[in-house]
Amino acid sequence: MNISVLGCGRWGTFLAWYCSSIGHDVLIWGRENSRSLLSLQSERKNTYLQLQDSIILTTSLEDALNHGDYIIISISAQELRGLVRVIADLGVVGKTFILCMKGIEDSSGKRLSQIMTEELETSNKIAIWVGPGHVQDFISGIPNCMLIDSVEINTTREIARNVSSDLIRFYYGEDLIENEIGAAAKNVMGIAAGMLDGFCYSSLKGALMARGAREISRLVNAMGGKEITPYGLSHLGDYEATLFSQYSHNRKFGEMLVKGDKFDKLAEGVSTSKALVLLARDYNVELPICAAVNDIVNNGAHAKEVLLDLFLRPIKRQF
View 1 (tube, rainbow, N blue to C red):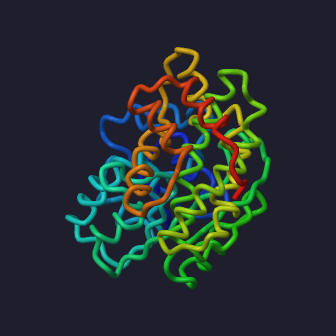
View 2 (view 1 turned 60 degrees about the horizontal axis):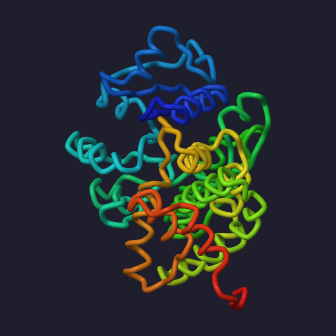
């Protein structure tokens, strides 16, 4: 198939490399001022991998949209609406867009597929590709399981069949609401885990895992999703890669924050925590962990006091 990847950061470049490695014709699009694209154009590699010679690099969004049967998007979640409006202005129809990103619009609390649906012509199909995995592990040949979901099961099955390999085994999702919310929310849990690591409270990450998944399941249920889904690949299944991995940007951000160090890479959980607080208000659901992370990273609350209060609250029932 012809596949275009919009975004040339760590994950976008890997997705292009991966799709090329399993036999697809791949093009990568990046903005003209993108340092990542300039580096790929001059050296055809980044910190993580060497691109195949067959992969096309371009700054022409129109060329990228024309090339791809599948259009994979891997950019910052907060930049998605702006990009999709440009895509819509180009009159794109009949394409399959696959969102390989985890976040929620922080100004509205809207899921990324909602943004796509609002902005694009209705003949375009929207899917998500989420779940655990780090570029560094995949490049080393370490396999993992991931998830494809969309509103149409036939679209889900088709995408999963076309991008599956021995390196990544795909499962079908059947709850788009939760799989998006869960995938985004695990980044917030990752920030919390990093802060616990920074304070040498790593033993509390077990409690964080259990309570975090339960917290998100309550939100998902209130939003009309399946309460069990957070315990699958998109959320709890991604915890190992987010709460414990040295490669997780969100975990590292949380750790460096409480140590007073600066982290210069994207940590989507910062914006997502703000969005989840909006959703908690709108759906009248308590999200104590998400609220605590938001208070710390967006409102300047004292991290150690907030975390200790969170985990040492008065005795209450487990569920």
